[in-house]
Image (tube, rainbow, N blue to C red; front, side, top):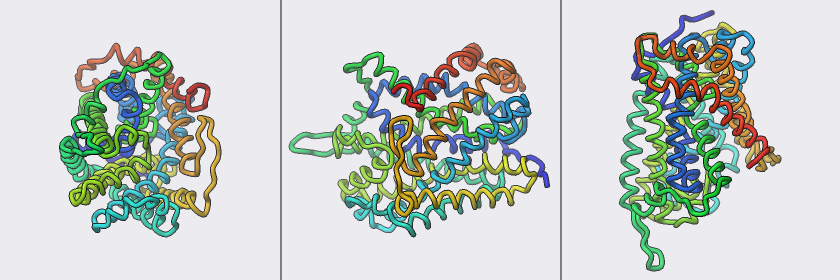
Length: 463
């Protein structure tokens, strides 16, 4: 059974849903520590430049492909050029691999929400709490299952009654939480052996560029880290923006919508840095900034909340609710990219496709959870790191497949179909494409080179 293609009720619904996709765990735990470890303000400046050039190019390209073809990511590339059908398969394989481990991490966030909302935040700050939790069996599976269930219910309801409706509820709350917690972070203060550290001092560490011992090699490293973060953050190369673009109405201003997504994503990423870097600096000093990923979110932050006394319990609850909402809005979009492709490829209903993908995510998510206990093992990865099941899935989806998808997209649009394909779609209602020359240069030359560098770095060719 083939259904009539749904659509967002308006541009606001599209922007909130797409921004919700972009604003996820990558903004909350990855952006802050990368900024702290890569020159503070230098990283921010490079990231902002990349948002307005590299990020804009990839984002508007994928949204335009979606609206032009009115197809899922699986079919969209083949409709543009049959020789690029394979690209559609890769574009769907990315969210298919990401969904299970994202739900496992979402389950971790749910657990911490419950801990803080029940007033047991002190337990979360105890040494070994996080490792003991993920090393367990029942609880990680239970919370991962709850996370998958929520996503499945939203996607099951469709575009306007599911994705758009929940985005209009969660996104404003998320933004208010971000602003409120960031404002509080600026007021923090601690004393350690007579030395006073304040939130404003932490802000200076965060935003003032550090050019100490900066070399060309170090600059390239910061550039690669910033580009990798942007790539991870704006939800390109996952089929998501193609899916959402396919639900965008012809009369909506695509160019304006993409600009608003850029603003939302960059704002939240920057504010997340304030929320995390400032407390870490105030209560743990510069050495605390060496923490990253899960240890930053699930180990360092609970220690900090405990150091704050009574107010720390309330702030911890607000913080993990914010992180949970960010994780939910992103995972919904990841699931939709797969579901829309299943619907079109097998000509099945949304309901059936959602249940199939929900079941697969639940099964693979269980394997990810068990990868920290019953199925624990480590393997070396080409980039020099070692990993468990989660790390392996993340490495192949984010570090290999995503650059390949975008390199292929740049070749297709920049050289086969020509940039005018996207420019015409983005300005079909008379809009002005204000970055036209930049877009042409980026999609044909600069973006493919940067993406190739990113891929070669992931393969361990250089660091």
